[in-house]
Image 1 (cartoon, one colour):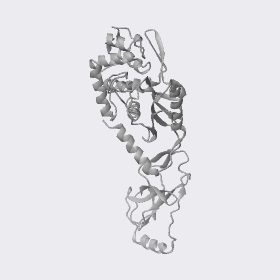
Image 2 (cartoon, helix red, strand yellow; image 1 turned 135 degrees about the horizontal axis):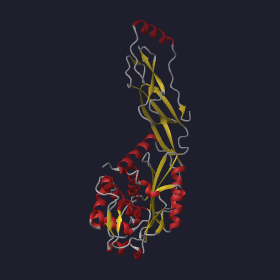
Image 3 (cartoon, helix red, strand yellow; image 1 turned 45 degrees about the horizontal axis):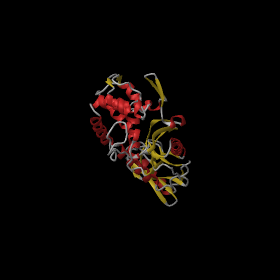
Length: 391
Protein backbone atom coordinates (compact mmCIF):
# COMPACT_ATOMS: atom_id res chain seq x y z
CA UNK A 1 0.00 0.00 0.00
CA UNK A 2 1.26 3.47 -0.86
CA UNK A 3 2.71 5.43 2.07
CA UNK A 4 0.52 8.50 2.48
CA UNK A 5 3.19 10.10 4.68
CA UNK A 6 5.77 9.74 1.90
CA UNK A 7 3.39 11.29 -0.64
CA UNK A 8 2.61 14.18 1.69
CA UNK A 9 6.29 14.96 2.22
CA UNK A 10 7.04 14.68 -1.52
CA UNK A 11 4.33 17.15 -2.47
CA UNK A 12 5.43 19.53 0.27
CA UNK A 13 8.98 19.52 -1.11
CA UNK A 14 7.72 20.10 -4.66
CA UNK A 15 5.68 23.12 -3.60
CA UNK A 16 8.61 24.65 -1.74
CA UNK A 17 10.85 24.14 -4.79
CA UNK A 18 8.18 25.62 -7.02
CA UNK A 19 7.97 28.92 -5.24
CA UNK A 20 11.20 29.30 -3.37
CA UNK A 21 11.21 30.28 0.28
CA UNK A 22 8.00 32.28 0.42
CA UNK A 23 7.41 33.60 3.94
CA UNK A 24 4.83 31.61 5.94
CA UNK A 25 1.91 33.42 7.47
CA UNK A 26 2.43 34.04 11.20
CA UNK A 27 0.46 31.64 13.40
CA UNK A 28 0.86 29.83 16.70
CA UNK A 29 -1.35 27.73 18.94
CA UNK A 30 -1.45 26.90 22.64
CA UNK A 31 -1.58 23.22 21.74
CA UNK A 32 1.73 21.54 22.70
CA UNK A 33 1.63 19.40 19.56
CA UNK A 34 -0.24 20.10 16.32
CA UNK A 35 -0.16 19.82 12.55
CA UNK A 36 -2.20 21.25 9.67
CA UNK A 37 -2.18 19.69 6.17
CA UNK A 38 -3.65 20.75 2.86
CA UNK A 39 -5.02 17.51 1.42
CA UNK A 40 -4.96 18.53 -2.24
CA UNK A 41 -1.25 19.41 -2.33
CA UNK A 42 0.00 17.50 0.71
CA UNK A 43 1.64 20.70 1.92
CA UNK A 44 2.20 21.11 5.66
CA UNK A 45 0.71 24.52 6.43
CA UNK A 46 1.65 24.49 10.12
CA UNK A 47 3.31 22.11 12.54
CA UNK A 48 4.42 22.21 16.15
CA UNK A 49 6.15 19.23 17.75
CA UNK A 50 4.17 17.10 15.28
CA UNK A 51 6.44 14.05 15.75
CA UNK A 52 6.34 14.00 19.55
CA UNK A 53 4.86 10.69 20.78
CA UNK A 54 1.78 11.01 22.99
CA UNK A 55 -0.90 8.66 24.36
CA UNK A 56 -3.71 8.58 21.77
CA UNK A 57 -6.79 8.49 24.01
CA UNK A 58 -9.92 7.99 21.85
CA UNK A 59 -8.06 9.14 18.75
CA UNK A 60 -6.91 5.50 18.57
CA UNK A 61 -10.44 4.70 17.42
CA UNK A 62 -9.56 6.21 14.05
CA UNK A 63 -7.15 3.32 13.59
CA UNK A 64 -9.85 0.88 14.76
CA UNK A 65 -12.21 2.33 12.16
CA UNK A 66 -9.57 1.99 9.44
CA UNK A 67 -9.13 -1.71 10.22
CA UNK A 68 -12.90 -2.34 10.25
CA UNK A 69 -13.51 -0.46 6.98
CA UNK A 70 -10.66 -2.34 5.32
CA UNK A 71 -12.01 -5.71 6.43
CA UNK A 72 -15.47 -4.83 5.10
CA UNK A 73 -13.97 -3.70 1.80
CA UNK A 74 -12.10 -6.99 1.46
CA UNK A 75 -15.21 -9.02 2.25
CA UNK A 76 -13.77 -10.27 5.55
CA UNK A 77 -16.61 -8.69 7.51
CA UNK A 78 -20.11 -7.30 6.93
CA UNK A 79 -22.13 -4.64 8.69
CA UNK A 80 -24.83 -7.28 9.12
CA UNK A 81 -22.51 -9.51 11.19
CA UNK A 82 -23.53 -9.66 14.86
CA UNK A 83 -21.21 -10.01 17.86
CA UNK A 84 -22.01 -10.76 21.49
CA UNK A 85 -21.22 -8.16 24.14
CA UNK A 86 -18.77 -9.90 26.46
CA UNK A 87 -18.46 -9.26 30.18
CA UNK A 88 -15.05 -7.74 29.48
CA UNK A 89 -16.56 -5.22 27.08
CA UNK A 90 -19.40 -4.48 29.47
CA UNK A 91 -17.16 -4.00 32.51
CA UNK A 92 -14.25 -2.17 30.89
CA UNK A 93 -16.22 -0.04 28.44
CA UNK A 94 -19.78 0.03 29.70
CA UNK A 95 -21.81 2.47 31.75
CA UNK A 96 -20.00 1.67 35.01
CA UNK A 97 -16.50 2.17 33.55
CA UNK A 98 -16.59 5.96 33.77
CA UNK A 99 -15.49 6.44 30.17
CA UNK A 100 -17.31 7.11 26.92
CA UNK A 101 -19.76 4.29 26.24
CA UNK A 102 -22.42 3.05 23.87
CA UNK A 103 -24.33 1.51 26.80
CA UNK A 104 -24.22 -2.00 25.34
CA UNK A 105 -26.16 -4.60 27.38
CA UNK A 106 -24.04 -7.57 28.42
CA UNK A 107 -24.52 -10.74 26.31
CA UNK A 108 -26.59 -8.80 23.74
CA UNK A 109 -26.00 -9.60 20.05
CA UNK A 110 -25.23 -6.32 18.23
CA UNK A 111 -24.77 -5.72 14.49
CA UNK A 112 -21.35 -4.51 13.34
CA UNK A 113 -23.03 -1.55 11.59
CA UNK A 114 -24.40 -0.32 14.92
CA UNK A 115 -21.07 -0.92 16.64
CA UNK A 116 -19.30 1.19 14.02
CA UNK A 117 -21.71 4.06 14.67
CA UNK A 118 -21.22 3.69 18.41
CA UNK A 119 -17.46 3.71 17.91
CA UNK A 120 -17.37 6.80 15.70
CA UNK A 121 -20.30 8.93 16.87
CA UNK A 122 -20.51 8.06 20.57
CA UNK A 123 -16.83 7.11 20.95
CA UNK A 124 -17.95 3.99 22.81
CA UNK A 125 -15.16 2.06 24.50
CA UNK A 126 -17.51 -0.90 24.84
CA UNK A 127 -18.17 -0.81 21.07
CA UNK A 128 -14.42 -0.85 20.40
CA UNK A 129 -13.89 -3.93 22.58
CA UNK A 130 -16.81 -5.84 21.06
CA UNK A 131 -15.49 -5.02 17.56
CA UNK A 132 -12.00 -6.21 18.49
CA UNK A 133 -13.23 -9.46 20.01
CA UNK A 134 -15.70 -10.10 17.21
CA UNK A 135 -13.29 -9.48 14.32
CA UNK A 136 -10.04 -10.80 15.77
CA UNK A 137 -10.95 -12.99 18.76
CA UNK A 138 -9.36 -10.74 21.38
CA UNK A 139 -8.13 -7.22 22.02
CA UNK A 140 -4.41 -8.16 21.66
CA UNK A 141 -5.06 -9.92 18.35
CA UNK A 142 -6.99 -6.93 17.05
CA UNK A 143 -4.14 -4.63 18.13
CA UNK A 144 -1.88 -6.70 15.86
CA UNK A 145 -4.22 -5.88 12.98
CA UNK A 146 -4.13 -2.20 13.94
CA UNK A 147 -0.33 -2.11 13.88
CA UNK A 148 -0.15 -3.98 10.58
CA UNK A 149 -2.61 -1.53 9.02
CA UNK A 150 -0.72 1.43 10.52
CA UNK A 151 2.52 0.20 8.98
CA UNK A 152 0.88 -0.26 5.58
CA UNK A 153 -0.57 3.27 5.66
CA UNK A 154 2.78 4.75 6.68
CA UNK A 155 2.28 5.61 10.36
CA UNK A 156 5.91 5.01 11.28
CA UNK A 157 5.87 6.56 14.77
CA UNK A 158 2.66 5.07 16.20
CA UNK A 159 1.97 1.86 18.10
CA UNK A 160 -1.38 0.53 19.29
CA UNK A 161 -2.13 -1.80 22.20
CA UNK A 162 -5.94 -1.61 22.29
CA UNK A 163 -8.81 -0.42 20.07
CA UNK A 164 -10.19 2.33 22.32
CA UNK A 165 -7.11 4.30 23.36
CA UNK A 166 -7.38 3.95 27.12
CA UNK A 167 -3.97 4.15 28.82
CA UNK A 168 -1.71 1.19 28.06
CA UNK A 169 2.07 0.81 28.23
CA UNK A 170 3.71 1.27 24.85
CA UNK A 171 0.68 2.83 23.16
CA UNK A 172 1.55 6.07 21.36
CA UNK A 173 0.77 8.19 18.33
CA UNK A 174 2.03 11.44 16.79
CA UNK A 175 -0.01 14.26 15.35
CA UNK A 176 1.66 13.80 11.96
CA UNK A 177 0.68 10.14 11.91
CA UNK A 178 -2.90 10.95 12.89
CA UNK A 179 -3.18 13.55 10.14
CA UNK A 180 -1.95 10.99 7.60
CA UNK A 181 -4.45 8.47 9.01
CA UNK A 182 -7.30 10.98 8.69
CA UNK A 183 -6.35 11.71 5.08
CA UNK A 184 -6.25 7.96 4.40
CA UNK A 185 -9.75 7.48 5.83
CA UNK A 186 -11.16 10.36 3.81
CA UNK A 187 -9.64 9.27 0.51
CA UNK A 188 -9.93 5.50 0.84
CA UNK A 189 -13.40 5.18 2.35
CA UNK A 190 -15.49 8.04 0.91
CA UNK A 191 -18.75 6.11 1.44
CA UNK A 192 -17.97 5.60 5.15
CA UNK A 193 -16.51 9.02 5.91
CA UNK A 194 -19.91 10.75 6.38
CA UNK A 195 -20.33 8.73 9.59
CA UNK A 196 -17.79 11.07 11.18
CA UNK A 197 -20.11 14.04 10.65
CA UNK A 198 -23.31 12.48 12.04
CA UNK A 199 -24.33 14.61 15.01
CA UNK A 200 -26.01 11.90 17.09
CA UNK A 201 -26.84 8.21 17.32
CA UNK A 202 -29.60 6.49 19.26
CA UNK A 203 -29.08 2.98 20.61
CA UNK A 204 -30.73 1.01 23.41
CA UNK A 205 -33.13 3.90 24.02
CA UNK A 206 -30.31 6.40 24.60
CA UNK A 207 -29.40 9.25 22.24
CA UNK A 208 -25.86 10.62 22.42
CA UNK A 209 -24.31 13.48 20.49
CA UNK A 210 -21.07 13.54 18.56
CA UNK A 211 -18.28 15.00 20.72
CA UNK A 212 -16.51 16.89 17.90
CA UNK A 213 -17.01 20.63 18.62
CA UNK A 214 -15.94 21.66 15.10
CA UNK A 215 -18.93 19.97 13.45
CA UNK A 216 -21.02 23.00 14.34
CA UNK A 217 -18.27 25.35 13.15
CA UNK A 218 -17.58 24.11 9.63
CA UNK A 219 -15.75 20.77 9.96
CA UNK A 220 -17.15 17.52 8.53
CA UNK A 221 -15.33 14.94 10.79
CA UNK A 222 -13.33 13.23 12.47
CA UNK A 223 -12.72 12.55 16.24
CA UNK A 224 -11.96 13.91 19.70
CA UNK A 225 -10.04 12.27 22.53
CA UNK A 226 -9.19 12.86 26.18
CA UNK A 227 -7.37 11.18 29.01
CA UNK A 228 -5.47 12.65 31.96
CA UNK A 229 -2.18 11.65 30.33
CA UNK A 230 -2.89 12.99 26.84
CA UNK A 231 -5.00 16.03 27.63
CA UNK A 232 -7.73 17.11 25.22
CA UNK A 233 -7.05 16.26 21.59
CA UNK A 234 -8.79 16.39 18.25
CA UNK A 235 -8.42 15.31 14.63
CA UNK A 236 -10.66 17.18 12.18
CA UNK A 237 -11.15 17.97 8.53
CA UNK A 238 -12.94 20.78 6.71
CA UNK A 239 -13.42 22.10 3.18
CA UNK A 240 -13.80 25.50 1.55
CA UNK A 241 -13.87 26.49 -2.13
CA UNK A 242 -12.86 23.00 -3.20
CA UNK A 243 -9.93 22.76 -0.79
CA UNK A 244 -9.76 20.26 2.07
CA UNK A 245 -7.58 20.55 5.16
CA UNK A 246 -6.82 18.09 7.94
CA UNK A 247 -5.69 19.17 11.39
CA UNK A 248 -4.55 17.22 14.44
CA UNK A 249 -3.73 18.64 17.85
CA UNK A 250 -3.42 17.39 21.41
CA UNK A 251 -2.44 18.36 24.93
CA UNK A 252 -5.02 21.07 25.58
CA UNK A 253 -6.05 21.65 29.18
CA UNK A 254 -9.83 21.72 28.68
CA UNK A 255 -12.56 20.96 26.19
CA UNK A 256 -13.11 24.71 25.81
CA UNK A 257 -9.46 25.35 24.97
CA UNK A 258 -9.52 22.45 22.51
CA UNK A 259 -12.53 23.88 20.69
CA UNK A 260 -11.06 27.38 20.59
CA UNK A 261 -7.60 26.38 19.37
CA UNK A 262 -8.96 23.90 16.84
CA UNK A 263 -11.25 26.58 15.41
CA UNK A 264 -8.30 28.99 15.13
CA UNK A 265 -6.19 26.38 13.35
CA UNK A 266 -9.05 25.47 10.99
CA UNK A 267 -9.70 29.11 10.10
CA UNK A 268 -6.00 29.70 9.52
CA UNK A 269 -5.81 26.81 7.09
CA UNK A 270 -8.92 27.78 5.15
CA UNK A 271 -8.64 31.58 5.12
CA UNK A 272 -4.93 32.45 5.12
CA UNK A 273 -3.90 30.41 2.08
CA UNK A 274 -4.90 30.52 -1.56
CA UNK A 275 -4.44 28.11 -4.46
CA UNK A 276 -3.05 29.78 -7.57
CA UNK A 277 -2.91 28.18 -11.02
CA UNK A 278 0.34 29.28 -12.62
CA UNK A 279 -0.02 27.24 -15.81
CA UNK A 280 -2.94 25.37 -17.40
CA UNK A 281 -2.20 22.29 -19.49
CA UNK A 282 -2.81 22.87 -23.20
CA UNK A 283 -3.34 26.63 -22.88
CA UNK A 284 -1.20 28.59 -25.40
CA UNK A 285 1.29 30.63 -23.38
CA UNK A 286 3.43 32.06 -26.15
CA UNK A 287 5.17 31.07 -29.36
CA UNK A 288 8.57 29.94 -30.61
CA UNK A 289 10.10 30.81 -33.98
CA UNK A 290 10.31 28.09 -36.62
CA UNK A 291 13.08 28.17 -39.24
CA UNK A 292 12.14 26.90 -42.67
CA UNK A 293 8.64 25.90 -41.67
CA UNK A 294 5.25 26.19 -43.31
CA UNK A 295 4.40 28.42 -40.34
CA UNK A 296 6.73 31.10 -38.95
CA UNK A 297 5.91 30.25 -35.32
CA UNK A 298 4.44 27.44 -33.24
CA UNK A 299 2.33 27.88 -30.10
CA UNK A 300 3.82 26.78 -26.79
CA UNK A 301 1.85 24.83 -24.19
CA UNK A 302 2.54 23.00 -20.93
CA UNK A 303 1.72 19.32 -20.56
CA UNK A 304 0.38 19.58 -17.01
CA UNK A 305 -1.37 22.10 -14.81
CA UNK A 306 0.84 23.82 -12.27
CA UNK A 307 -1.19 24.91 -9.25
CA UNK A 308 0.42 25.99 -6.00
CA UNK A 309 -0.89 26.70 -2.53
CA UNK A 310 0.68 29.76 -0.94
CA UNK A 311 0.05 32.24 1.86
CA UNK A 312 -2.25 34.97 0.59
CA UNK A 313 -0.30 37.80 -1.03
CA UNK A 314 3.00 35.89 -1.17
CA UNK A 315 3.07 35.93 -5.00
CA UNK A 316 3.27 39.71 -5.10
CA UNK A 317 6.10 40.68 -7.44
CA UNK A 318 6.28 37.31 -9.19
CA UNK A 319 6.18 37.50 -12.99
CA UNK A 320 5.90 34.94 -15.78
CA UNK A 321 8.16 35.13 -18.82
CA UNK A 322 7.84 32.89 -21.90
CA UNK A 323 11.10 31.97 -23.60
CA UNK A 324 10.97 30.22 -26.97
CA UNK A 325 13.65 27.65 -27.77
CA UNK A 326 13.98 28.99 -31.28
CA UNK A 327 14.37 29.41 -34.10
CA UNK A 328 13.53 25.68 -34.28
CA UNK A 329 14.43 23.96 -37.57
CA UNK A 330 11.41 22.54 -39.38
CA UNK A 331 9.86 20.04 -39.32
CA UNK A 332 8.55 20.46 -35.77
CA UNK A 333 6.66 17.55 -34.17
CA UNK A 334 3.65 18.13 -31.95
CA UNK A 335 4.81 17.71 -28.34
CA UNK A 336 8.43 18.60 -29.16
CA UNK A 337 10.25 20.52 -26.42
CA UNK A 338 10.20 24.13 -27.62
CA UNK A 339 10.63 26.57 -24.72
CA UNK A 340 10.14 27.48 -21.07
CA UNK A 341 7.88 29.46 -18.80
CA UNK A 342 10.03 31.26 -16.26
CA UNK A 343 8.60 32.45 -12.94
CA UNK A 344 10.78 35.11 -11.40
CA UNK A 345 10.82 37.57 -8.53
CA UNK A 346 13.28 40.35 -9.27
CA UNK A 347 16.50 38.70 -10.46
CA UNK A 348 15.62 35.33 -8.86
CA UNK A 349 14.18 32.49 -10.96
CA UNK A 350 11.70 30.58 -8.82
CA UNK A 351 10.58 27.92 -11.28
CA UNK A 352 11.19 26.83 -14.89
CA UNK A 353 8.31 24.97 -16.57
CA UNK A 354 9.07 23.15 -19.84
CA UNK A 355 6.84 24.06 -22.80
CA UNK A 356 6.09 22.01 -25.89
CA UNK A 357 4.92 22.57 -29.44
CA UNK A 358 1.14 22.65 -29.56
CA UNK A 359 1.03 21.34 -33.13
CA UNK A 360 3.21 19.98 -35.90
CA UNK A 361 4.86 22.32 -38.41
CA UNK A 362 6.04 20.86 -41.72
CA UNK A 363 8.93 22.14 -43.83
CA UNK A 364 8.07 24.92 -46.22
CA UNK A 365 8.62 24.54 -49.98
CA UNK A 366 11.74 26.02 -51.51
CA UNK A 367 10.15 29.29 -52.63
CA UNK A 368 8.59 29.89 -49.22
CA UNK A 369 11.93 29.24 -47.53
CA UNK A 370 13.67 31.79 -49.81
CA UNK A 371 10.98 34.38 -49.11
CA UNK A 372 11.20 33.68 -45.39
CA UNK A 373 14.96 34.10 -45.38
CA UNK A 374 14.66 37.52 -47.09
CA UNK A 375 11.96 38.62 -44.64
CA UNK A 376 14.12 37.56 -41.68
CA UNK A 377 16.82 40.00 -42.77
CA UNK A 378 14.49 42.93 -42.08
CA UNK A 379 12.47 41.60 -39.13
CA UNK A 380 13.27 43.01 -35.66
CA UNK A 381 14.63 40.59 -33.07
CA UNK A 382 11.83 39.07 -30.94
CA UNK A 383 11.65 40.04 -27.29
CA UNK A 384 10.34 38.10 -24.33
CA UNK A 385 8.57 40.45 -21.91
CA UNK A 386 7.85 39.44 -18.30
CA UNK A 387 4.18 39.70 -17.27
CA UNK A 388 2.73 39.91 -13.75
CA UNK A 389 0.88 36.77 -12.65
CA UNK A 390 -2.29 38.80 -12.20
CA UNK A 391 -2.42 39.15 -15.98
